[in-house]
Image (cartoon, rainbow, N blue to C red; front, side):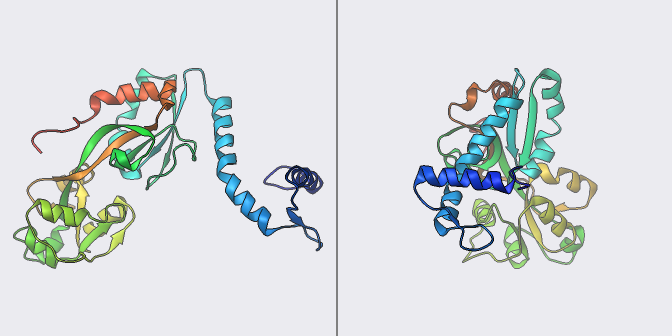
Length: 276
């Protein structure tokens, strides 16, 4: 029996023969003892897999969603843990009829292709074609390091950080350059340093004295308060990106998404906050 399809090999063979008859093309090489797909069949399967996954996800939503609605939400791990999770109990209290299913994604992706109704993600609205977006929070960054690292270096101002190992986050490749520009420090060429794929790991790297990390202020408040990290600048600097609730244009008819968006709206930051 084929464990993926829950079908016997004979049933799979008959389905394959039926598909070959419809397409008028041979999809299987039967010249050997084991059935093997032709090159055309492999290419065909690759091209239709995304469409079949979309159909399967849509069918699953129709079958599983209660009348009030289920929201399938993609989130960023750090922002989801520190900003969204503490607020979610209030949403559950106000809307116990809405089920929120969440999965983490680090980079932009196809909302419809992966079966999500919406995503909470970092970037700019134009990063998501054919969508609508609501700003939740501008990202404000602050350079931090361990107390031991600070004690071992002479860091009197932002310019002195250029001589330090700079820790980079994969999803913000230009963050350090933008930050230095915002504090009127000129840089030349590419800013070297170790790169990490998540804020959780770059935070640990900074705490263990591996260099200076440029972190969102909301992520390091507790570490600064407990002395695990120290700030090397007197305030957080906004560098352009923001966290948005993003949904496919037209998908706002989803009852769960409407309730979630309307609940988040009063907690969202103004689109152009003052002072900048």
